Length: 202
Image (cartoon, rainbow, N blue to C red):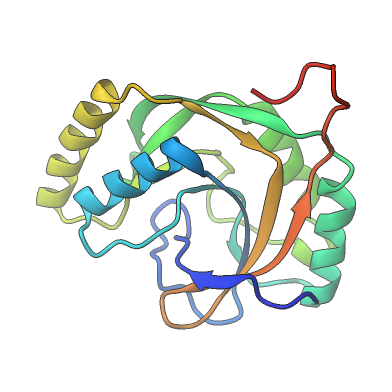
């Protein structure tokens, strides 16, 4: 396995909390640039102690069915042969059971869902408690007061935001929980890029 690429925080999706137990892994695509900075700042406004890097999860947190090395090889084999694509963000939504505030996707859902289906097997196989629903988490495990304030703030900030609302999924990162509410990057896999002169990710 490649050396760690750095330690930071990535939240488990749909209400399972940022402090997952040890030996839990996930697969994410980070959101960089102006959009990533905006989403990071918004999460901090909702929960000031939040230090979670902006991302979309391809595989929500899980214990592995096989060894980490086998999981990393599986990710590289699948993602390394798929073309990069764009994700466009849609509206502010709420998961009804967990009251997780999130941004839904207006484009890119089919590609993410297809990758999730292909990857959720072998060493990465896991019986997930929720059906896979790709999204960008903005706030989770909130008190009733935090939820109401956070939902109103999210809608206001998103309506005011004038920057890009899409991002490329060109590299995906395999991460592991560190046991202290943080996650360590293990491996990165670059997806296929189209040749120069052909339509690419926007």
